[in-house]
Image (cartoon, rainbow, N blue to C red; front, side, top):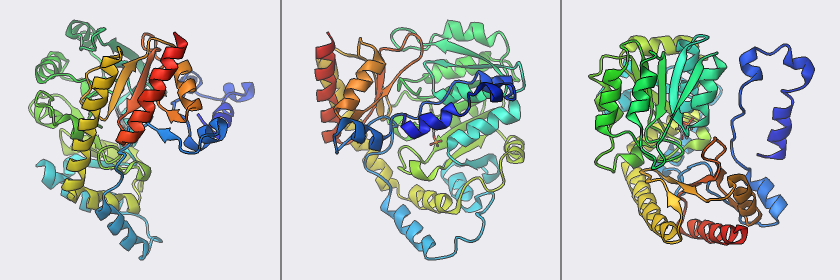
Length: 386
Ligand SMILES: *Cc1c(COP(=O)(O)O)cnc(C)c1O
């Protein structure tokens, strides 16, 4: 984390303020946004720092999106954005084959995760997620006073359906999972997902976070959540984003597709009225039409993932079988220490901190030259730590 971010977060903890905070906020874990490249460059003295910590698209944003934004910036940004993002919702509706009233935009899909918890999670409600899990799947339910239970993956990164059944027997208010899973890159199979949903109480809300859908769908056994949930007779929402394969992380825009318009209407009630800015709406609309850009960058990333997975396997590392644009690597050493050593060599990855996974790092698949530098540094660092 940057020094600045550190000092901002610390401001939350003076004892006086502590008494004023809701107890949920007092106990809330901080989200780890990863190290800042400028700070790492400053400390390490290395000018060309590479950032493989946030699963961004290394090939960047579609040129069509830049063209659309350029046009916009010649015009008038003095007006508020479309509060419902109708134009983009219609384009998404057409592409996905659902009515536009079942779609909501968010200031990043994380915004919708937050809205879902604000809308549906009451104090004491049971929420299920995975372990290891995406930080916000823990933070947002807890922020609302939810009781979070994390279901562990097996040591070979499989989903343990027996443990899931036992947890589902307690009738959770919500199941919030990423499929494929961040940080492992693995996924619930079609059969597992259908079986679990059918086993769950009819009142349980299913939140399927498909931030890496565009990468995963290239694997024939990956379940398209939207297709599976259509016929499940449970309340549900599928979340996708423009931050990863579409290369628009800096603009903050994602979307959700839900079981019916009422579900979406409830979220609209809770969100701030102009939560998705005009530039993001315009760029996402253009990026959506550039199927070539998404296709080419996804294919290049998958080819790279195969290449570096082989290199790391040959070097003896255990890696979860990923269908995404990142890999989860067991370094067999303290991940935080590995991360610090890598940073001193100008390489930023994400060290994992959850119990049972604190020897793992998550590495985004970047440009080939960046991946090579990361792997060389990793081999060097772990050799020296032996
Ligand atoms: C990256 C990521 C997100 C965040 O997406 P935004 O649209 O940028 O907010 C959400 N969920 C998971 C699992 C992610 O990995």
